[in-house]
Image (tube, rainbow over all chains, first blue to last red):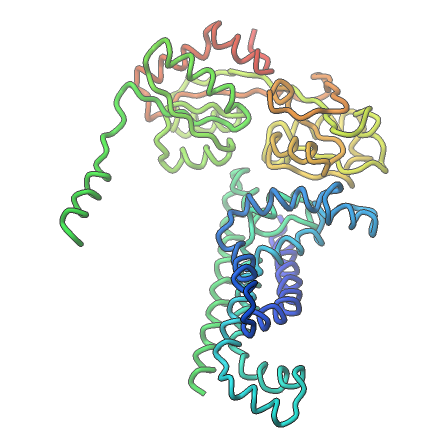
Length: 221
Length: 247
């Protein structure tokens, strides 16, 4: 029985999701932290929705959206010849939506905590907005980036309901560790379920502990 | 905490234990609609209230092992009720087959189910997970015994159960689904382009067994429900919902 296949798949999924959310989420978080647009509450609401929606709602919509007839799925079929449901790429999209608030909110909080004068000082010294972001904002917001990345990684690792609905349980493609554990429980294979669960438990502890330990050191600098 | 709030909470905790005229049955999800009609009929004639708890056979089994307060278990297989009997969680000798399942190919878009199943270039084929679901195991036996597995294996996706298989096929995510015959009589079944009944001799039989749980060993209401399940009235309801019954 292979324990590490599903774990490795979960880690790959979590890594891909974290990188994409870092790239896509940072500009969104920045915009949210700076804007006074009347659309801000709408955008914030949309970002926070995956926190409160049950995975069944996301899974149900994704099954339709990512399927061969769906808005995203049909476009993907034309592009690649296969649908997004039951594929690793589909799970990455699903995970990005599912973990989005976990990435964006810590980053947005960090950006909002920056003193306004710091930014203005950089601008008056002639730094472009992009330059100011990378040389002033980013180094001061490390805690927000680390928090957002660790949480989206850990949350994706623990994803279950959405994957159950759009994954199709294909070994090596969509059978992530949470699904493998579920299968083992259902088939009375409690020994294997224990091993995998313990592995995930230890992993989650290490990841979160690492983040909190990092925060502590960061704060006491 | 304010004393009044405390008293209210205490009162909520102290809701009366279910009386003898209440039954709780654990039902494999695929049988839930049928069980609802059966229990309504049973309640109508006996006045005994029946509460139904739906779930997958494996999950309900684990809950029973861990002390879930069920009186009767209507499983989707033979294995779990037999295990419960052996481990003393169910009353020895109370086990019987209450329904037999069959399989069909179903497609929303394809007009020839079998040809589409055999066409390696056609889309995904959905079946229930053979490791978990009895209907999935039978579907796999059919695919292998009829020599279709080779063209299907690369295109197979696995649902948690036959219900999810239909969901995959009904949303067009799978071009063909291997579903349970009982689903064909479901009033909510979407329009299909083809349905093909899989010959029963191409796979092992799918027997769903019921068992009286140890909790209810001396519960008269549970005993009466078990007897009702074997009556002609109940068998007629089970058959009408697309299952076979024991001769």
